[in-house]
Image 1 (cartoon, one colour):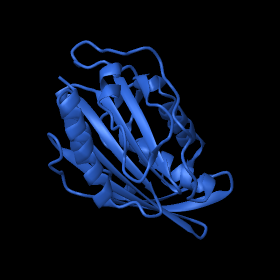
Image 2 (cartoon, helix red, strand yellow):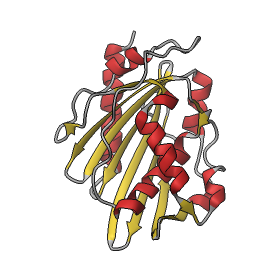
Image 3 (cartoon, rainbow, N blue to C red):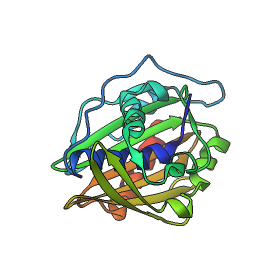
Image 4 (cartoon, rainbow, N blue to C red):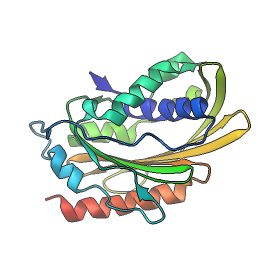
Length: 230
């Protein structure tokens, strides 16, 4: 089974904000499966895990890194489950999102850092140049830049902002989502960037999340990966 990268990220954030009123920390990641490797990709999940950020100033690590096949990572499974629980006022936005999918069997690693009311999550996926380039070049459809979600009886409103292609790594994209649920607001910024034989994402979520912080952390993550990966 393949997973659409940005729809899951956008809708999971939306659903989580709806379910918890926009506050609170994400569930801590847990260890995944044995090291995963896909022919032609080049990196195992263990190698990707070693290249993850080890600290983020001002945050604490929320558990140990999770690694294995992408589809077996507990946070990814939880994200897909939460996405299925959310009701969208524009159902087409769940399927007509950015082009390209992440195969469930690609090697991947993930780590989360947290502070009061805010999280930073880094995900790395072993991926061919062509597949990673599709993710970087994809865009949120114009009709999906504003949408609403409902979890249980609680509705939330979401507004998406997407920047032109960026220059982090071998190409990047930045997407922001502002969410209002009841009288609570939160922001999430995603940076997706391509490195040598991998795709990485940085997600900063919380009431004070900014594009500047997300892109700064993405550059830090790129430098870390360049030092570690052969």
